[in-house]
Image 1 (cartoon, rainbow, N blue to C red):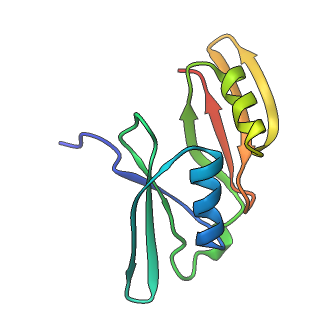
Image 2: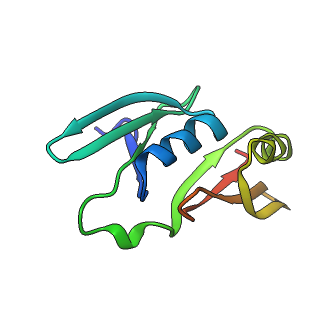
Length: 120
């Protein structure tokens, strides 16, 4: 049976710039960086997580770059995490919002891909 999500893909224009953003600003760790044929495959680990983030855009899917992502990250303390990420230069398109189920905020990467970060 299925046991976990191995990785999720984030479509990016410039893999080098995206790699720097995700490692230096978000704190992800480089796990794999290989060239297969004419394309580069980059996998990033989220410290303490099981799912990897892949910075990769398949040919013919460039229109996905800069869209609202279906990826939702979690953090124990949203306000603290948002402040740390802002100090690293991460742009938030939605400041933290407190709801009955928890708190969430939205941030974007260099390409305009937008992600949610929420409390568990």
